Image 1 (cartoon, rainbow, N blue to C red):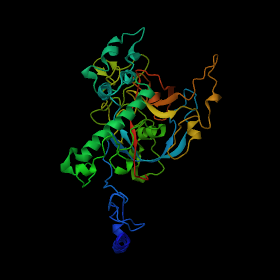
Image 2: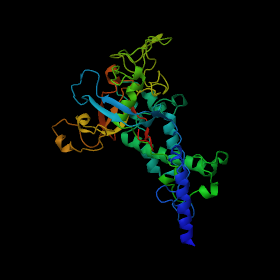
Image 3: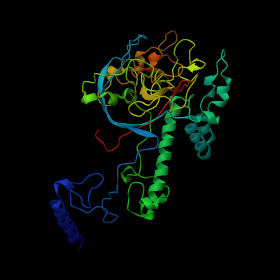
Image 4: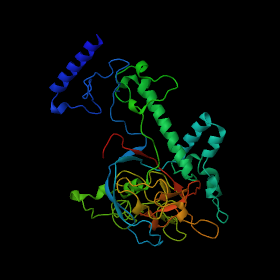
Amino acid sequence: MNLFKYLSAVVVGGFLLASCSRDARPTSTDPGDYSSATGIEYNEDEKAFQVEDYEDFPQAPGLVFIEGGRTTLGSMEEDVAMTRDNLERTVTVASFYMDETEVANIHWLEYLHYLKADSLPEVYQAALPDTTVWSRQLSFNDPYVTYYLRYPGFRFFPVVGVSWLQANDYCTWRTAKVNETLAKEATGGNKKRGGLFGRKKDAAEAAPAEGTALSVESGYVLPNYRLPTEAEWEYAAQALIGTQYSEDENQNNRRLYPWDGHQVRNPHGKQMGKFMANFKRGRGDYAGIAGALNDGAMITDYIYSYPPNDFGLYNMAGNVNEWVQDIYRPLSFQDVEDLNPFRRDGFLDDSSNYDSSEGYHSLINDEVRVYKGGSWKDVAYWLSPGTRRYMAQDSATATIGFRCAMINAGSNQ
């Protein structure tokens, strides 16, 4: 009986495959009912290969799509710091997703709320930003120490005082929380939609057993939120998609900043003459003169301030610097691969090459991470996407925040 059933499935499957037109080939979202390799029916019983209903995963909360492509990493400015650590290099970066804004105080307070409810006290304590980064012995920034993180008026200002390690932990938490929410909706939270990913099964059939995690194969699980790589961040900041006039593959219109031109003021429309980013104009000049403030912000600013770049990303220059995944090495741009470049460790450039013992001044080791973008406290030089700096991964300042990224799963672009 079983043999007959198997042969029948093969015959039926073969017939279906033979009768399919070239326009009805199986796809990830419509794989068909039978295997195109064996002719065996999917999902026939508990022993059969289970193929979940699937649609391309929805855009994750807060992220915008960044179409990948070729670019040139490195500085468009003179190397005024004489570091020679950002020599130009042509690479290709795959498509990915990125937060349209920096992670804000309200997002971090939400994170602390759930940690306090669900985690051990020491986990909550470890996640608290260092608000003392505002404190200066010879400056009266005391109000920011008390109010910047928690006062409602600062809700949508970028969170600061966060180390690379804390930012990384936030990405892990955000992944779990978003997937938990999506899974609840997909398995019965909104039956009218047939599940978030278009499943036709009812909630009882779709829900996983208590205490078990949904698998990647289920189609419910979004990829991880994470810090962007340095190459991804720089590519997203350049936003050269806005310069491709008449399909100019030579990219003759490279950008010094995340916007067109070589100036830091808006040359067009009603905002003509306004600064395009929040930065320090010069020594002692954080905002300009009263009545004609040049960027309108003595410290950080609203995360949606200033025009977005051509990918729709806000404040990819100025406001706060941003952590990226990579550890720092001076010759990273020369060493890394030219497809999705990334330095995860000291491979090819061991930390023993940099003597940080007493009496020497090298700060380079395997615990320093790159940050990019310039901040409210930086001059215009650091607004150029190719510039790069580094700091210990457990350190924090009032000038560094971050945003999250995510791979473009199921795509070869």
